Length: 158
Image 1 (cartoon, helix red, strand yellow):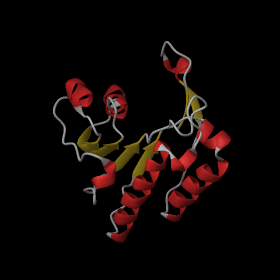
Image 2 (tube, rainbow, N blue to C red):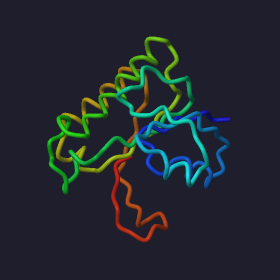
Image 3 (cartoon, one colour):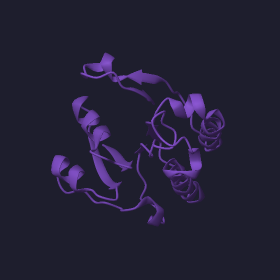
Image 4 (cartoon, rainbow, N blue to C red):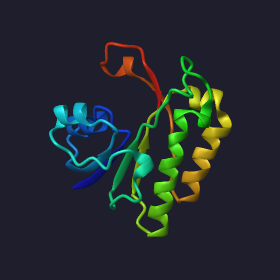
């Protein structure tokens, strides 16, 4: 069974996706400032709380994170890592702790706005380099929800 942690969990879309495609999994916990919506959809789930305050996470097979996109978004402030989107550095910090303990998750998935790659290429390259140095094979693509039976045109970088 796949052991999963969701950071910046929101409503738990990754959990729902795993359910929809029939992958047996257990969500060990989430990181979300307000987990009420997540819990109303998925039931009571351990919340590690605000990512800034998390010292370390338990081992898991898969971590998904959708760090804030507001500072990268075409509609946002476009202040990059100096804004809310800088919280991605907290993910890096937690992966460094995993690496120090020699228990890196087998997989990670990430979702954000395509503008991260297009308008902030240096930040995106730093992201790729960080995970490459941790030993991950990285594959990315921009996907549009329109082509996956969703009634909206919404592109996202995965």
